Image (cartoon, rainbow, N blue to C red):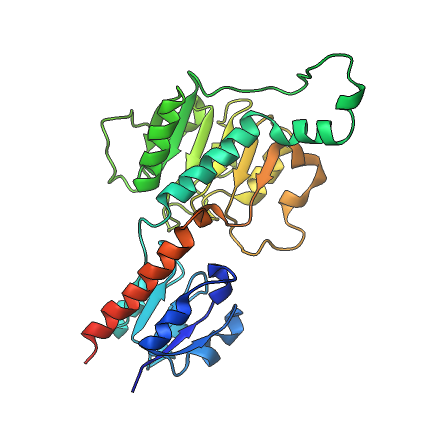
Length: 314
């Protein structure tokens, strides 16, 4: 008899995801999305659960005696109580390395949009204002170059190193800080977080969310930023305190771009919806990992994780 596998967030893999191929190996039940209050009901008979952002607290895991394997369609594992999972003998599998190119692309998409004030110039042309111009060009907002600028990286893992390599190619001077203390790379100068924030023109975050990185950048750290600095979060929501950023943007001249929020989807009345700060803010809905064939790679790797678990099954 095939084991029951429950897919809790199929829609997060796109409208045409291919997880249906799992049906060859398991009895599969798939839900487009799963609110937290339905997790127990939907998983009560599952041996395998496939999820992305749904929370699996220790309390939930203890109420799922049939659960033997959790496959995460992502790299981050902060949504699972890993200690309790280990105690209960539940195997937890994630996917690493699938999104390096994709997240790197998105990092630079955000950076270049802000460096060039692209949204402003696009609106200027489309509003018809350019039609009224007396000259062929219009420099009303800064166009900031990366050449000879300081690019600071928070978290020099695989993605951080790729961003560092490309930023160097654009003439930026790269430095980094390690949130874990384990990443040491003599290719680039290593700095404390405080020094990195004080000296960098662009800062990009590529760290995981854990107890050490939650609210890593808060009010005190934001005050260290240079004028016109660009802070980019493509790591995890919760690393940067969102309320503190929104408040600081009201009075300070810097930019913030993020693809991740502490609560996703974005909650109503979020401070980032303040009309007064929109010109300094760039938001995307957790899409950095989805360029090109990345989702396809993720699906293939997730299916392999399920198959690997099945090989160990008695």
